[in-house]
Image: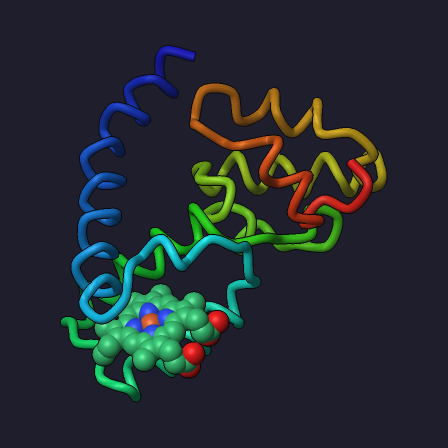
Length: 140
Ligand code: HEC
């Protein structure tokens, strides 16, 4: 648990930076509050490239930062189908935790409750209610 805390503290400025970059890049033409629904990762990539086509400006680093923010805050996944690589940025957990989630699923079958998942992710700011509402975790 101590290791987790250290990791979270280490990540905290980064989260704020990503949000700030998102506000700057994506708030240039319209309010970022219009980004208020969950999409899949490919859908976000499409949206961002559409915005670039109509004039959104930023460095490639800034767009990486925007994508990290969108993945962490506004992306839905199906936890019973997603790969570890898909899970890690969305649930905002280290790769080894995402791999443990996938391993658990392989050993125990599909998740039918969020409890186990929540226990792998305690304290990282994961929004259980948002995830279950947004049908990324159907029926859970
Ligand atoms: C150059 C100005 C500009 C910037 C910068 C910009 N947008 Fe947009 N965005 C628009 C315009 C114009 C529309 C409305 C046209 C439309 O709906 O396609 C729009 C619409 C949207 C929509 C609603 C339409 C949809 O696809 O659902 C979303 C979501 C969105 N933008 C996300 C973003 C994100 C994320 C960023 C940052 C990467 C961003 N925008 C940056 C101009 C911009």
